[in-house]
Length: 78
Image (cartoon, rainbow, N blue to C red; front, top):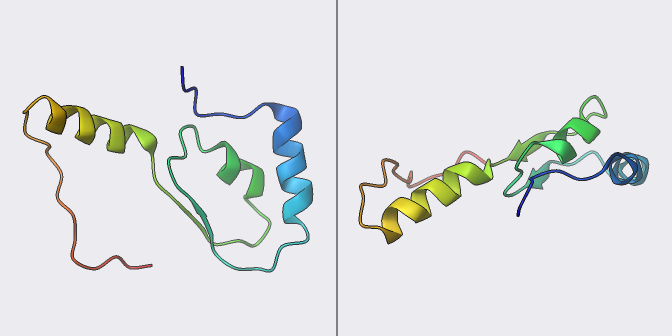
């Protein structure tokens, strides 16, 4: 089952590796528990992410014929 998280040692590797990245926006799709974002917070990155539960809820409702309850905007800010 998808848990939406990565183990502590892997979070440490992500943070260590990110130290050499240029200061650009970081995009994290289907973020689950925001573990990548929590690993990178305070390092100067602009973090952009989306929660996987919104996607899976919308897909589940659509596939079962229920109202999806969300709408897509024509233009995304980023």
